Amino acid sequence: MPLTRRALAPLFASLLFSGAAIAGPNDPSKFDGTRYAPQKALYDFNFARPLDAKPAFGYVKNHLRAIKEYGDPKSHIVIVAHGNELHAFSRLNRAAYPDMYEELKALADAGVTIRVCANAARSRGYKPDEFYDVITVVPAAVIDLAKWQNEGYSYMYAEWFPRLTREELVKQIPELQ
Image 1 (tube, rainbow, N blue to C red):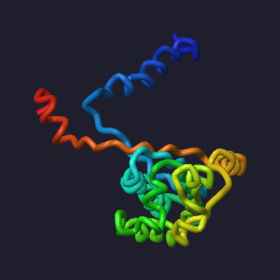
Image 2: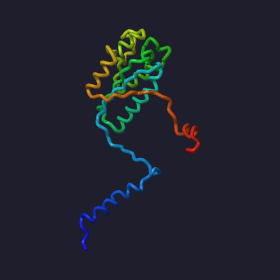
Image 3: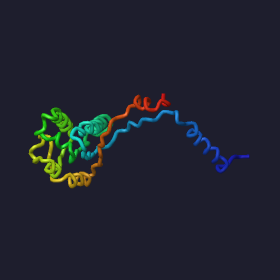
Image 4: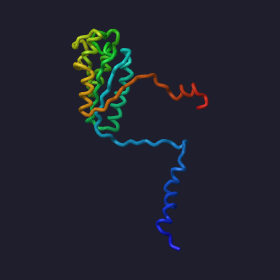
């Protein structure tokens, strides 16, 4: 008796799905190292404390490293700042934040555009010319954020919080040992 397509369908289906049934929670994840097209990213900085911008720079630096390794050099990153990090971005406060200029300059030298909201600056007691030379002051963060999004930039909010390592997690949850 010859096998028809209809009779073979359940057999093919069971073969097709049998691989999925073998995989499980103990199998390793996969890595996708596909190269990315040019990135256009817009980071919104609005932090409660002046130095919170520094660890948030880690997001931008990680993005730059990923672009270098997996992306297109035509990529561009923009930071628009309008929170209390403005205090650390002002050249008037270098004594309080001595290495902030070097951090900002390194980002600018890597091609990152750094912009500060004039409204936020004014409400904190700063004039537009009181920020470092690697910063451009713009009329308002809200209109600048919208400008970059209208140009196709992806909105990124770099919320900073303390990093929890696996070792610290295992200390908190001993069952993971």
